Length: 73
Image (cartoon, rainbow, N blue to C red):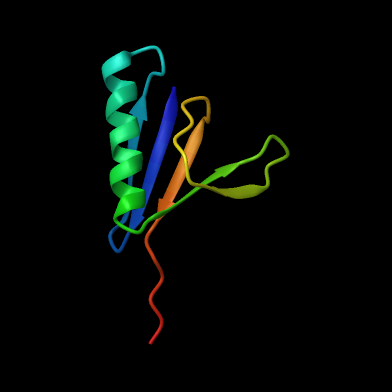
């Protein structure tokens, strides 16, 4: 089961989906596009554990973390 973790000012929200479920996979891809389109950065981990920014939806990734755009002031 894959997970999308969305960070915000309240903490985080987790969305779990089964890559074998076509509807869940479509919902996850739409969520990915909506969040990155709204300015969130998506990050995954490589097999060695290093974080990497991703710009495309990959259903084979076990966990994707979304964090909002940082605003300085």
